[in-house]
Each structure stands twice: as structure tokens, then as C-alpha cells.
Length: 321
Image: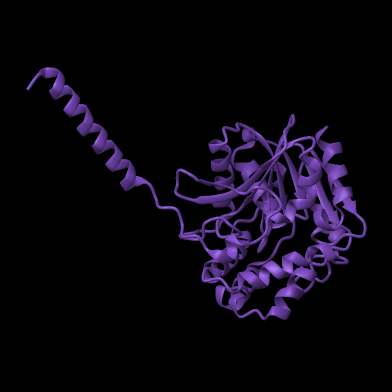
């Protein structure tokens, strides 16, 4: 056998070994769930698998001098930002993701956490070759965005916090009550009427075009993966109270826009902190973040970016331009 032929055979053998190793290391794509995959999203959904094996669904719209990454809240999904992407994509690159366990992202082997979700955001940025971005977070997404800014301040150019979790504080007893109340089992036992009411309380006056959120939530309950989704939601609640950011807020050095709806019925918690007001919670967080500005949006509840999108989008543009 000639030396050239031996070299060719050796090279082919090594290529086969390499391909075999890659196949063994790569995690298979998750099985497609017809219910979650069948949810109607307004923008083209893209999928990617991060190096840690996390399967992510996201949308990527528009171009501009700034890139905004939108992070949804507890029990929500990326369509929560539809009205904001529709306008802001005319001026900026707008990326919104379904967090692991939510929407069309993977639901296998999820370990919900503020730090782990922040790492997912950075993983998405790495995959898209984004060294820096503006992070916009709603409710739980706001606490994730704050956590990200504390972890990697050089990668977060600015923060946009819409009714963020993390400004309101809780005692250890209150935290335990949260975790005992919101469990995968309690979520799965939620009646359709309760599920609808849970969404409606996010609004001051729920707009008619938000009905899809109720419809989608009822559809999710019919999915074989609803148990995994429920575990992600319950785990997220535990993570929010177990990974607080309030004491670290003075360490947030990036320019920050804080927005709250004046009629927010969820922050503060009306049962655990009945003596607090939304304005007081908002001003407390604002006072602790050095380079921040606060906008209180009238005629808006917790879901202010969807209920009053014009006011939200205008504030964002004024902040970024």
C-alpha cells in the first residue's frame, strides 16, 4: 500500500472518529410539542441550542444603533413584547426570547434561577456575537436583567425595567409562604377561571387584544409538557425570593430606566405588604440605583408595556436616543 493511500485512509478514519464524537456530545433537539409549538407568535421564531444544551426560541427583528434584548416575566412568554417590538424595531434591533421552560423554548432538564436565566441571556448574546446589549425586563424579567448587570456589567449597556421584581423585599417567613403556595401541583390544579383571573389582574383595564394571553394559557394546560412548564414557573418563584437583588441595587452602575404602572395591582403584594404602595416600591428601587430615572405610567397596571405601549415605547426612545 502506498504512503499516500495510507495517509488518505488515516485521515478518513480520523474524520469518522471526530464525527462520531460530535454526535455523541451533541444533545438531541427536544421533541416538538404540538400545543406550545402551535401558539401563534407575531414574528418569525428562530431556534438555537446553546453550548450547555439549552434549547432556546427567540425572535430577532429590526436594525439600529442599539440592540435590545427583551426578557419576559413569570408565567409569560415573548409575545408579551409584541406591541413594543412592532414600534421599536423601526429604530433598534429587537430580540425577545422565551426563557427555558417557557413558550417554545425547551422544557427538559430546566433549573430555573435568576443567575441561570441571566446566563441564558449571555449565552444567546454569545451565539449572536453580541458583546453588549440593552436589557429590557418585565417583572421577573426585570430581576433577571438586574442580575445580569451585576454579573457582567460590561456586557449590559443599559437597563430598561418594566415593573421589575426585586424592588419589593420579603421576610424569610414570607419567602417560605411564597414557595409553599406556588408549587407545580398548585399550578396544574388552577382552574380555567382562576387562570383567566390571574392574567386579568395584570392589567388596570385589560385590553381586548390581550385575550390571546388567556386563550394561550388555557391551551398550555392541555399540553403533555404542562407539568414541566408548571415546574419552571414554580421554580422561578422560588428563585426570585431566594436570589434577591435589593441590597445589591447600589452596585448597578449602568444607566437604568424604571417604569411602573400607577395602578399596578401586583407590586407590592397586596396580601403580604398591604401597607406599601406601588409608588413607594418604585421610588425605593429608583433611589438605590445611582444612574436611574423613574417613569410612572398612568392608566396602566402591572403589564404596562402592553396596556400602554405608546407611553412605554416613547419613554424607551427618549432613554436610548
